[in-house]
Image 1 (cartoon, rainbow, N blue to C red):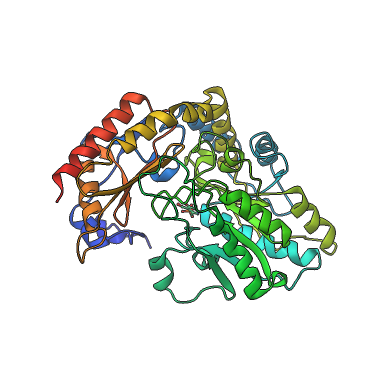
Image 2: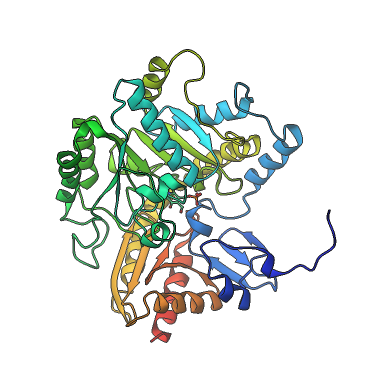
Length: 438
Ligand code: PLP
């Protein structure tokens, strides 16, 4: 049955959205190009958030569009269960030149959430394959965001995402978050707080290393408000995890593909995890794709430890979808040809100055930055947390600037093609919005 109906905003049940408020005052985009979105009535909105931290090369990139178009005409879909198509092997091979040297086998999926749940399952499969089947526990971190799968919300630390649903994976524990371990208004990484990594040691003492499969963190927490780590923290976590046979998973869904001025946070911090979750920038968000890059030891452990036949009973209908593979290859070309990771690195200082120029603005209680991730945190209104930032967001939007807010933190993460003049506009508009809100 396909009967004619009225096109209504009501029909779409929107996630992570105040549906009733949105439908009373909808904000729609009709097209996008470069640094800008355009509304259906033709208004220009400067994209200071790369969509949702994902359009790292800017919008409407011809090379990527052309690759998707050509692939759709040549091979629309092919399964990757005991079958395949050349482009996805090419993409996995190309990633070897982008990711840290030992992360040389990549599993594909369709989103960051799937990447996280896949990484958790691969960690369990590995531990079992090497005879460590008692290691079934995961350690996450408070204020972490790892997507919305049951695995992701269990290891995650965003309270509302967990509390609403109740059911979670058993046996999960959390490190404390690192926010507040160094002073507000710190530029880049904190000088103090590395010892918070010792929480992993404490949890090993509590639960026993032989029960812990993996620890997962975002190298720089994004969704809970851009929280750069203390200096030395990730190094220390790596050392403790290695010493106890615990796999270290970096969730680089946001930090991957240039956001921190290097291909990955692992490269920027010179800390190599055992598993790395990727998504978003892998295709410049043009076609959904997620991935888990696996250390050689993990891949080989599973290959040699599993019985003959299928080694990993996990995969998605759209794992390695041809359109995503084509988009991914073209995206890597764009990043390389335009040197966008290096460009992000070269703009970091300018962006940092711009973010911190807001430190004396009304109600601002912290400014934070690392790479091309920046945040301005506002004091919450008495009894109405989040309301002040929501109002600043709305004012920015009305003045032609797309920001993102979480709690009372306004985050900015522009496409890596951003110009210094765009950064000036972002800060001017954000400053005006902050000044206008009580
Ligand atoms: N992990 C991190 C660190 C993220 O920031 C996100 C999304 O923002 C996810 C996982 C989930 O990705 P997706 O929304 O593609 O499922």
